View 1 (cartoon, helix red, strand yellow):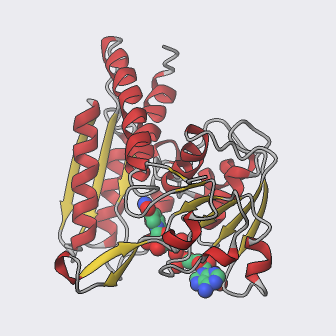
View 2 (view 1 turned 180 degrees about the vertical axis):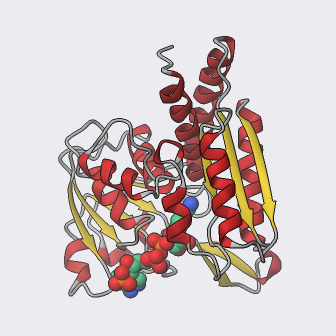
Length: 297
Ligand code: NAP
């Protein structure tokens, strides 16, 4: 049977519609969720992400502010700005766009954000809460998006064997922790593989669900998966292709053509996991506003 192609665009659209509704109800109750995004320097990709975050806020009715700082901004100035927004009740979420210029410590910056406003979910307090399964934590956006995609596409991970490829702090480790929780949308048995894993194919062949987050173009091939596997491809890799516009195109960590022949369901790249990330940032911002205002609506 043909594989179900899971559209992140469609799922993100329906989550955004729900959030828009929720925000308008909150506004009617006198609460406007707010997000401030701080970007330091001119990194082109970061500029695009920041613009998209602002547009998403606008679409949903979230109050947003974007602070653009020059690349030579001193670390102390950035920390002082974070202190200011930590204390500003108009903003429920604070996001500092990464990467930061080399002279600024990312660790110091992330630690300075009030964990209650850390809608990126990278503060160690939120990481700890994620591990213990605390309800008031902000899950990191990309892995949270993977969980939503699984659930909303009818591929509940409960009781399944999930193999995660990659152990980064932003994708591999958090998705592992999210899916092994004793909770709805989780309850999986999770195996995590990385560059030192021996005989990786032995693990992927036994997986019911594979989350690929390695940054290696087209790594996972059809002969490495079993029939009926569900694939979440987090990888975003630019490869050269003279036939494509601009001479290159995006591919995932999964060799889509060979794997889709065996898969029950699979996310494409682009248009799969990617569109979920900013949507989950919006979800976290709305959640933060609910917590801050004790909104039960
Ligand atoms: P990362 O920090 O570079 O981590 C990559 C992980 O993959 C590491 O744990 C590494 O193992 C492992 N790995 C690399 N090559 C491997 C191999 N040949 N066999 C087994 N494991 C291997 O990457 P990341 O930040 O997690 O990102 C992963 C991918 O997801 C990238 O393509 C990135 O662009 C994409 N991404 C997409 C989104 C989105 O769609 N919104 C968000 C974030 C990331 P070691 O730990 O042993 O080095």
